[in-house]
Length: 301
Image 1 (cartoon, rainbow, N blue to C red):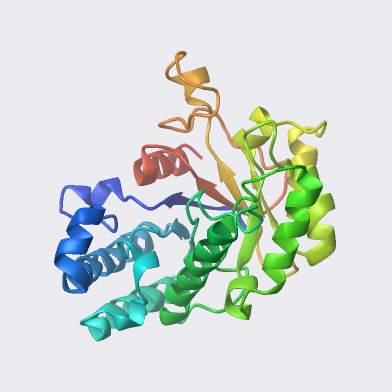
Image 2 (cartoon, rainbow, N blue to C red):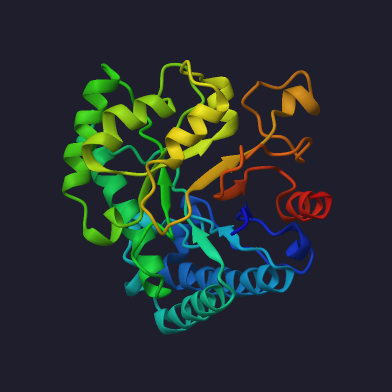
């Protein structure tokens, strides 16, 4: 079994043909034009999703992160209430069918506003709805409820301590519906005050068996005393047998492309070889040149 590689959201190879799953609108437009316009945008976005997954299948790309922006202002309505929902659903079914037939792993990464361990009950409520709707999209695509199709988030808070934040996270997690829990995974953070691979392993995985997505760049920016190999392999150990672990990779833009950037800024391209330390897992590239960088890297390999 080989390591598999994917990219995130935007397919630059198709962008000049108007293929995009990120069409949206400002809040004012949403309020003025309502769900009819949302439905129109969602149809175009899901049609583009089908085109992107077809492109990936043709290129032999085995992993793709879907955009969380496919449904503009999703928090303000229920997806199945949209006018022309049947057209949207048919597009999602077709995208799911092609992905499964081409053995293409699909993922989601909701926004940083998704904070299950927040001190603010309103934030928790909104976060739960966001996750439920991401899981609903995967259900509508007939993607199995497992970590094969992960929904990846951060803890996103450490107030007043990591231990307290972990306790609040666990409490909210325990009340999530099964179609969310079956897919939810946690990623290590880039900020020194936030969660390292060791933190996620000790404070959350040991308690609720949630898998850890290892982010190479984040671990460089927020080390925990573990080497890259140790952090990677600790994270890989949290994934259940039969499911390929998910990881994220980007080089530092500051190191290779722009010395004025912050260390955490993602690079445009992959500049070195990704060290897997002889482990087999899936690698989602978080680089600015998206599919172009992935294809270039695979050609180099």
